[in-house]
Length: 292
Image (cartoon, rainbow, N blue to C red; front, side):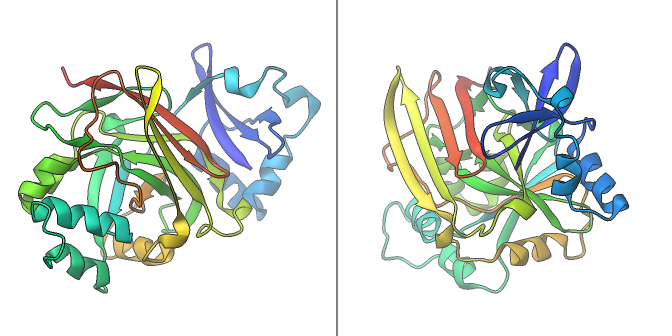
C-alpha cells in the first residue's frame, strides 16, 4: 500500500495506491494526519485507508497521469553515511586520492558503535518527483546518492518508507571532511518521493532492491542495482541515534545511506535525468539543472 499526493486544481489530495495499481482518493490531505487519525481510532493505518476504498473515491484516470507532488513536506531531512561497504570504499577513494589501501576515519565510523548522521535538508530545500535537482556551482564532481528513506513520527516510530536522492559533491567532501555540510546542503540538493510505502505493508525492509539510472541525451549512461540487504546498520539503530537528546518533528525523513556510487570518472551535467527505483515504493525521477 502506497500513499501519494496529487494536485487537483489548487488543492493537494492524498490517494492510496494498491499493489494492483488501483488508486483511491483519501479524505485526508496530509500524511501525518492519516497516521494520527488511525492511532486515535485504535486501528492500523492500512485499515483506515481501506475504509476509503469505495466506488465514489476511486480515481477513474490512470493514477500515473495525475500531477504527483511530494507525498510529504518533511520539516527536516537527515541522512546516515557510510552504512554500506560501497559507500565506505567511495569515501576512502575521495579522501586518499585513490589510495584504497589507506585506513581512514570512514573505516572507523563504518565499524563504530555510533553511526554517522548528518543534517541534509529543510522543507524549503527539498523537492519532489519530476522537479529539478541543481548542481552546485563550485563543484566539478557531483553525483546522486540513491537511498531508502524512513518517514518518522515525532515519537521516533517508522511510519513509512520513501525513495530519496542525497545529492553529493565528492570533490568537496574528499578535500576535507569538515566541508561535509557544503558537500551535501545547497538549493534543491535533496529529492524524495514519489510515494510513501506504509510500514505495515513491508514484510522485510532489508530485502528491497534499489536501481539507479542516469540518462544523458536520451540514453542510459549509468545503471546500477543493489539491495538493502547489504546495509551495515539496523534501521531502528539509526533512528535511535538520531532521536538521542534530539527533538524529532512529525514527518521527518531519515535517509539510510547509499550502496550505489557511479564510476569515479563520472559527474552529473545539466540536462541529465536521474531515476531512482526502490521495489514496492516506486521511481523517483528528477532532471538536473545548473544552480543559477
